[in-house]
Length: 159
Figure (cartoon, rainbow, N blue to C red):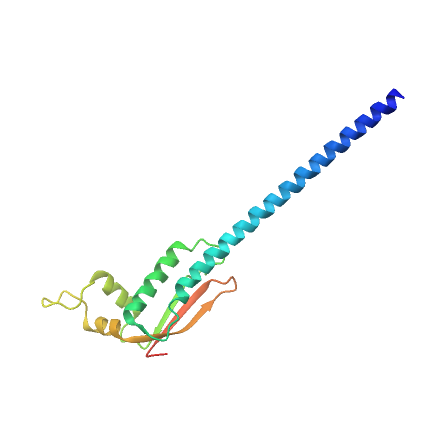
């Protein structure tokens, strides 16, 4: 009789230990799933915020000076986001058709000479000033399979 009582106590202790271990295992699994979902949500939120920066330039009327801002955003994004999962390996491309000079040349000149032509000739060239005051429109924004913006295109004239 004493042995059977002892056996029931041992079996009860083992059962309680197994239930406790099961509860801890389930709790750990739920906690790790939550952490994984939080990391995914953070990446998705980051991607949505990133794409919105470019989608803000999807306009029917923009000036060349706005394109300089887009080009600056492209340059910064290609430096700061290159290590993110799904970010385009070649970086974001910006295409402009119809301008009198290339956007790269305009960007460099605006960056180096932020003022217009001056009497002594140290300012920007007239082609750059013409580009900055010209009207453009966004023609296309493309995304990769991961959902990141890969290119943004503009053309001269109103859209």
